[in-house]
Length: 523
Figure (cartoon, one colour):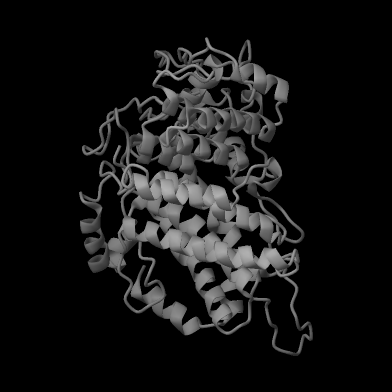
């Protein structure tokens, strides 16, 4: 974050119109007199934050699509094993083979600190001037944590606690996570008090494209996000992890598919899912080989909801190995594409993920029976979220024999990349020492297409087993077997904020490279 940007933010103060710009051009104004100064409802900043908090989704041009592709899809979705792309750009020497030198590494940082956080700072200024009420600020703080924990889980340290000041040093990831828990606890307390006395949603009805102003659902999301982050820190602080996780569960997390957090078009707010253009117009995204191995090996009924059938003889669901290192796009365009349209909601945090988080928590606390109950509930919820029947879920849960399958490369390339099955476990619960692998493997499937969260969980737990890239790693610090651990700091920071980003490298505990593990990555 450059000092220039910080000074601009400070000078802006509470000038809401300037920052909202085109994203809020359709919001209703309090004063519609064309000859008078136009005022924008400051709660509209919630929409501004929502549209970029988890993924950039605004606009009708290729700009937000390209941001999503370079910042999320071509990085996390690939590193998680969900998707692959034979069009490897830059002559094949790009982040998909762990060359992190290009501009893609800037995207997530830029969205967080030039779009979401300036809107949050404006909302905070409005709150300080009593222009928005405490529950609205609580929602803004939840969105802040949603944005920044994902960015931190990509880079590590970030310039957060002094954002908007003339000097903006980076904070260690441990400091950031402490800040996230404190922020969530404050929001939870505010929303708990508010919902105990009123069910009024009018404060956010016009501007909340996630829950339509339902603060009870925002409260459940805040607790669920706290549970997610509690499990993230398990390997660095088991006691704090258990404490925060139990607090979140006791306070009330998401348990129903109706309460899952998803962003979609709402009233005058248009949300366009960028993945449709990426797989369809760009012909870039196809099913990853790891998804192929698991979904086909488990004969998973959700695969038809997640991916289209391949346009080859015999159909079926077939994917592509990651990190090919060569441009062979034409070989793969007939293979399975993400089953995502422009109107498909953007998934943030669903009931199935919460159930698996609870399953892991109870497993860690030695409660095998409760862990099993939550594990099986996670599968049932995921089936429901993907429109698959409960009867099929029950049959799937009971299966003791299916494992991940051998990967057959169904492209028409001369030398197909066939390989042995991903090492896997059975679906049916068993007290056999593989409980954690079983929980995380099914969680990984249920999280699709949330590659950012799936990649973080793979790094944290080592599960599920996913295929490494085929080409040699372009970063000598990255072991192909253990795979990439983080994305390096943006080039713009080295150009414009050199002293602070160099200081941030010392907080990493290793070089600014893709092989350096994050603070919580200590299994």
